[in-house]
Length: 251
Ligand SMILES: NC(=O)c1ccc[n+]([C@@H]2O[C@H](COP(=O)([O-])OP(=O)(O)OC[C@H]3O[C@@H](n4cnc5c(N)ncnc54)[C@H](OP(=O)(O)O)[C@@H]3O)[C@@H](O)[C@H]2O)c1
Image 1: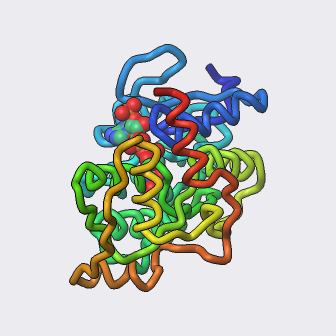
Image 2: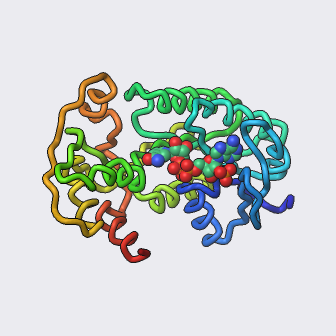
């Protein structure tokens, strides 16, 4: 096990599995941490700490893609940082979200706190913020496509494909620690109405009337102001429609 160089936490998730595939395709030896038993997986839990020391032992790089949607994002990272320090201080690559310091969502606040924890950890680190994944945007907009009239928020997204983000993360993992790396965004910034239209078309349902709505509240205002966008960083190559077409191929 000691010859494995890279650990990917969350390597079973949407992004993490793409990172693992990318690194393995490049010939790298990759270890995956998961709470569930599976082949080529080190079983462990970043909430309890069980198995984490074993997972981190002997690695040069940890790509931290595991996440917690229930307020324990920083706790997971704290456990990982502690184990990593004991293991000799591998390069820690943390995946965050564009706008975590601008959009007042609880999950974003937890990610921002975790960025600060990683930066202060004393470990060599890289923090990569990315815009919203295609899968998240599709999920947000697909429920509504079942209605005859589709209400969508009057905001835009810059969805990015996890395969593109994985390409960037694999490169960062094999490079020197970069601190806070430049943001990584999808190739297009599109109104939610246009994205909802694409989701509807890809699902093969009858064309629905899409109605953009203004939503009250400071979170919506932050989105409307583009706090979650990275217009100067459109490095992602796979468009939202290409992603949807790829999904259709698998149906
Ligand atoms: N979704 C977006 O639009 C977006 C945009 C930018 C950045 N990001 C960031 O990208 C990262 C990956 O997101 P994703 O959508 O790929 O996540 P995901 O598919 O929901 O996967 C979450 C992963 O976390 C692991 N995990 C959860 N709790 C754990 C625990 N206690 N111990 C160990 N592992 C645990 C899960 O592994 P097991 O279940 O196998 O244990 C799973 O592999 C996150 O940090 C997210 O904030 C997401």
